[in-house]
Image (cartoon, helix red, strand yellow):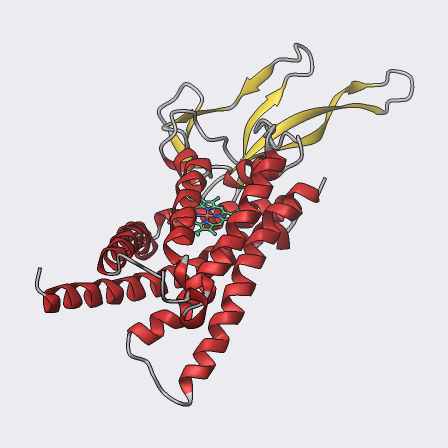
Length: 310
Ligand code: HEM
């Protein structure tokens, strides 16, 4: 390969790395804002807010297009990064033998490919933890259901004439129209669970034994996430994760790695794109440093709080 072809392809690769990297930073902000609902809102309100957000994210056409752009960017950024690192190594076979690495580049810069690969592995594990389960797993995702004790009159005291009440647990399902509909109840006599509606295609509600579509429900991604990071805690029927402590530690460690990667990557992307201005460059550099600390830190806090909260 001629020297100029190598240079141009190398520069083209760096451009694509910068563009996809900055796009992924935008994704991180959006993803973080959505995930913060896991700790900012509590109880049924928080669960509802998160599941509605997850539903919106997977049904809005613009967001869907952005999601595909995200997947492609992750792949492109990772493959391009590895190719660049290999190319650089080949171009400098004696690497840093005479060239004190610390003298002209920070350790983060030298280790970008290693850090990036670790983040890529994290993303693959992370997507299999949630995204795969929510979208493609053969195990049906739990639905957003809520059980309430309902008081019903079951008779009358013959002496006093007072009503005799009984409480029965009734389960409601949240529909995408925003209302709760009766889903099932425990029959007070037989103590058996009686289904009122029938679920087809994982989320579609039909009147029991009839072909009448009543509405669509939400997948309970909130309970899946809370149970995943929760301390040995079953959440709304989602089994507890025996390895929640390990998961929290792995996520926190991955966020530390992400922080190092962004510390160098953010301002470096602007440099590659040729944004070089005496007034803006220092501001971009400072913004990049703040971004690389705050964003991973907030991401890491989420599993830690879910783990601590009882
Ligand atoms: C530590 C806190 C995090 C939590 C609790 C979390 C939670 C989730 C959940 C629940 C989903 C599934 C959403 C769905 O399928 O509707 C998801 C998807 C995803 N997450 Fe995370 N996430 C975290 C951090 C991260 C980080 C740091 C990255 C990237 C470095 C990341 C990358 C992704 C990607 C690429 C998807 C697929 C998005 C899509 O389908 O559009 N996540 N995450």
